[in-house]
Image 1 (tube, helix red, strand yellow):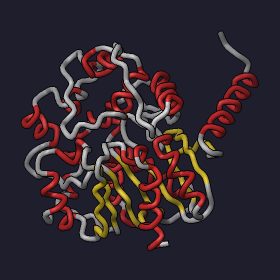
Image 2 (spheres, rainbow, N blue to C red; image 1 turned 60 degrees about the vertical axis):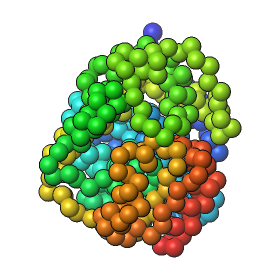
Image 3 (cartoon, helix red, strand yellow; image 1 turned 90 degrees about the horizontal axis):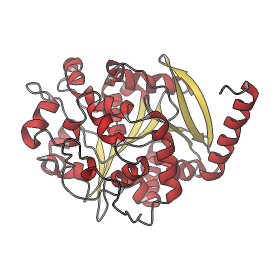
Image 4 (tube, rainbow, N blue to C red; image 1 turned 120 degrees about the horizontal axis):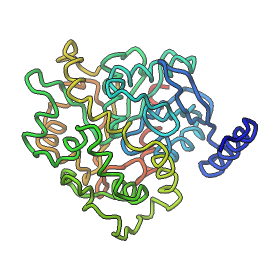
Amino acid sequence: MSYPKRWRERERGREREREGEMDGGIEHRFVEVNGIRMHVAEKGQGPAVLFIHGFPELWYSWRHQIVSLAARGYRAVAPDLRGFGDTDAPPDVAAYSIFDIVGDLVALIESLGEDKVFVVGHNWGATVAWNLCVFRPDKVKALVNMSVAFSPRNPVRRPVDSLRAIYGDDLYICRFQEPGEAEADFARLDTAFLIKKFLTYREPAPLLFQKGKVFGGSSNEKIILPSWLTEDDINYFASKFENTGFTGGFNYYRNLNRNWELSAPWTGVQVKVPVKFMVGDLDQSYHFPRTKDYVHKGGFKRDVPFLQDLVVMEGVGHFINQERPNEVSDHIYEFINRFS
C-alpha cells in the first residue's frame, strides 16, 4: 500500500517527537556527506564533541553522554555510522572501507562548520577514531577512546588471518567474514534477544560462535537486564536493526583485511593527538592475547605518545559508556575541558 507523502511526513514527525521524549530532547536531522545520507543526533551549544558508536549499536549508545555534555556547555554530535540505523547502507561490501567511514566523519565535521572537534569512540567507533587521528589529525582536538586500544599495523600478517590462527573459525570476527552466512545465522533469532545478548555479555574471554549457532542458536533463554539497561533501550536498538538487518555492521569486519592492504603507507605512524583511554576489566577486548601487556608495558605509549590518561574500571564489561554512564561522562568532560 502506498501512503500519501503528507501522511508519511506526519508519521516521521511523530516518530521524531517520540524519540525526543525518550532521549532527553535530543534533536535529529540528516546530512549529506561523502555520497550518503547520514542521520545525526545532537544537543547543546559550544565546542563540538563527535561521538562514534560501535557494533551492534547506534547513536543511541551515547544517549547519556549527549545530554551530560550538552548540559556542560558542549555541542554533542552522534551520527549513525554508514550501514547503521537511519543512515544509508550502501549494498557493496567494498563501500565500508576505513577510508569511506573516516571520510564520512571528515565530511560531517566540515558540515558542522568546525575545523577541529573533540572525538569520543567506543568499540568499532574506537577503531574508526584511531584511524581518523592517523589519517586526519588536523581534525581532532583530543580523543577519548574506550574498549579497543590502538592496534598498530602488522606489516607481515593480515588481521583476520592472525585472529583465525589464534582462535579458529568460531571467533565472531571470523564468523562474520562470509557474506550471507552471518546474516542467515542472525535471522534465526529474535532481534531483541540478539541485542540483549550482546549488550549483557560480560565474559573476559573472546566471543565464539559455532556455525549456525549464534548464542546457542535459540532465543528461548530468559535474560534479566542489568540496572543500566531497560526494555525501552533494547526495543529502540531492535526496532532499527529489524528494519536494516545487520549486514552494514558485518561489512566493517569484512573489510579488516582490505583495510590492512589499503593502509600500508601508514605503517608505523603514531597517533599524535592528546588521548584518554578507558576500558572495563571484564571487557573481552582487554583480554585478547598480549593486549594487557601492550596497554600497560610501554607499547601503547610508544604508538600513542600523547596518551595522558589510562583508566581501567573494575567490574565493568565491554559496553562501558552505557554501563557506567555518569562516570564515563565525567571522565570525558574532565579530559576535553583541559583543551577547551
